[in-house]
Amino acid sequence: KKMRKVRVFEGTLRRGMATAASSARPVYMVGQGMTPVVRKNPRPLREMGADAIKAAVSEARVDPKDVGGLYVGNMLAGMLSYQQHIGPLLSQSAGLTGMPESVTAEACCGAGGAALRLGYAAVAGGQHTTVVVAGVEGMIHADKGNVTKGLAAASDWEREGSKGETFVTLNGRLMKLYCEKYPHVAREDFGAFSINAHRNAATNPLATFQAAKPVDWAKYADSPLITDCPIRVMDASPTCDGAAAVVLTSDPAVAAASGAGGVVRVAGSGAASDLLCVEDRQDPLGLAAARASTERALASAGVTLNHIDIFELHDAYSIMACLSLEASGFCPPGEGANIAKEGAIGLQGYVPIATFGGLKARGHPVGATGVYQ
Image (cartoon, rainbow, N blue to C red; front, side, top):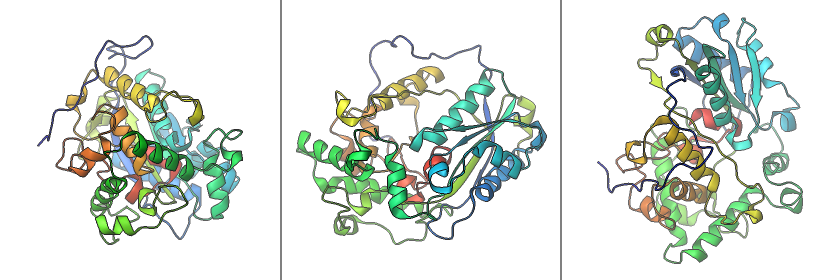
């Protein structure tokens, strides 16, 4: 099945990195719920979030009053819907009657993943036995200019966003820099990421492009440039709404009673942050935080890259998918687009990505994306 052996990280663990902890309680994922990812017909945040949470709790066969914590990922509700305090809002709407701890995680595009890490830590550390992690985002009701400005708030606003930078322009600069640094990579090679994502979305009934026509090399090449940067429409994920939720528990009896048809053990977790302003980074193409978080997660789980069968990365832009593959060690720098073109990222490749469409074709409801992934 594997096309080539993946590169394993070399060297010893750096100070501060997590290692597999035998003292932590096991964490099981016992239920999930998702709403369709949509680009029209917006629904209130509380309805989308409640639907996802109720579905997850029902599949887990957990009594709502036994949920000890609710951790929610969201980025834009305060700016676009004038609604903060998403945790208590969804707790009430979903009928979690046990007065759970309700926290909203703000980590922009990584908010859903941050919420999942908070829930994992709470269960593994013994603070709660059973928790719900959810992500919810509503953008399509808002003016496109306000959405673009809101998303740009994830940049260094004083030095980037307020100067006119958006995530289209920032990713465009990275793509241009990449092609200059690695001249053997053709601009069109990035199309492999879009083609793969759309092919996989066709099997996902919740994907926003599930019923869309397949993307091929010609369609990718014909897609218009978004601005004067190298980013094409087919390189970028769409603006979407959606909500997703999972139930985590340390109780083996709860895990055994789940109606999910199978239980997933969360083996490890890792996180890191880099310098926020792109110009401050020593190597803008290196994605140092992606590398560090991958190392920490692998160490926490006690595994190596050679154990990994699926890699769900953050493909908001094709250049991000490429750089994430490289930073996480699945290929050397300068080879991400090449291995994608060779088929390594497909379902039969050695590092399948975007297996349900990814951000590009399933859709990218920002604060919910980490939970969908």
